Amino acid sequence: MGFLLAEMSGFTEIMKDRKIWKCLLAEFLGTLVLVFVGCGSCLNWDGPSGPGPSITQISLTFGLTVATMAQAIGHVSGCHINPAVTTGMLVANKMKPIKAALYVIFQCLGAISGAAILKAFTPEEIQGSLGMTVPNKEMAVAQALGVEFVITLILVLTVFGVCDGNRDDIKGSAPLAIGLSITACHLAAIKFTGSSMNPARTFGPAVVTSIWTEHWLYWMGPCGGGAVAGLLYRNAFQAAPARPDEGNCEYEPCAKGDKFQEEAAV
Image (cartoon, rainbow, N blue to C red; front, side, top):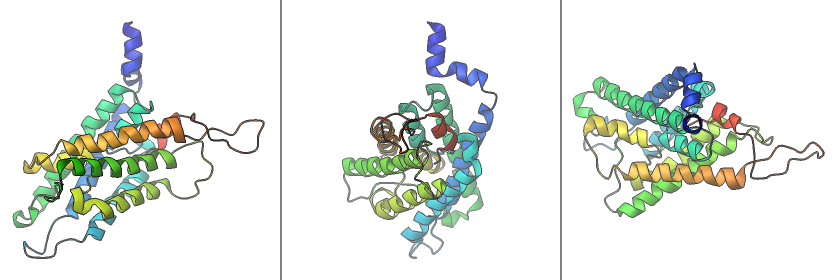
């Protein structure tokens, strides 16, 4: 019974995996860079009365940063750098619980470090909220929760789709596709919720600035969206390998799992 639990929880996997520390270091560093660069683009250098950064600037910065880090560390950890992506992988049975929990812990530590470094490197009068995400005052909490759920579902569906090892129709760059999905959702949702799509991205600045306005929805919304996306892709959208006796690839709700672990980015 104890052995079975160890297998199901992933404890055995962690004990045997001598490279787990590389994965955790990659998740830490990737999330640190995402928060430092992404939140850095949100700072207002024009002063309180100035126009501040544009939505396009912020959207492109977050999207391109994720795409860049996916190229840099995707082969090491899958470059989740987002607890919502890790949640999607967990519910889709692409990760074991203990490894997923370790990923989330190191993502949050990386986010805190990135926010702390950003604060240390930024003049005090410019720091503001360090790019903290809070719901628009005109929105109800349920509306903000729904927005974060939907935009994160889009992101995680994109991650699963472009990293599906059984597809042979993808000719472009998977990291770029994921980065563009983040850019698109930011362009649409920044005015609604700040477009977090990533609990760690909000958690890091929250710890450093002590701004916890409706913080729970930035966990529940994205993680809920990630979980639904993982289940949806696994049970409805996964591409099946081409059958040996057929020349074309038929799509069925069954596909390889290891490829996700190796290539998933976000």
